[in-house]
Image (cartoon, rainbow, N blue to C red; front, side, top):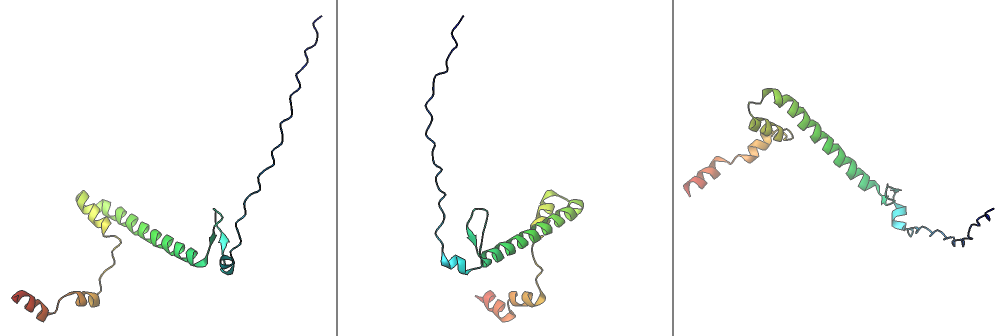
Length: 116
């Protein structure tokens, strides 16, 4: 009969203690603001949120204007350049007659410039 094989005794590995997570130092200036922690744990103030919201709204308006112009222009544009120019102008605002009057030179100014 064969003698039973004995398993060699393994030394137990020392258990490593988990490192405590470093907590950020409290900052009173951030606590004074109505702040909350974002995904990365950084405090975000109301002003930052307001700016981010305004930027997102502006981006959405621009996206919608460009998208609508693309959908309209694809049917009426005669060439790619025409299509591209229509889309490029989709976010422009119309100029009021009051603003147009300010931009046009007065007759005396244009006359004096032409004589020079």
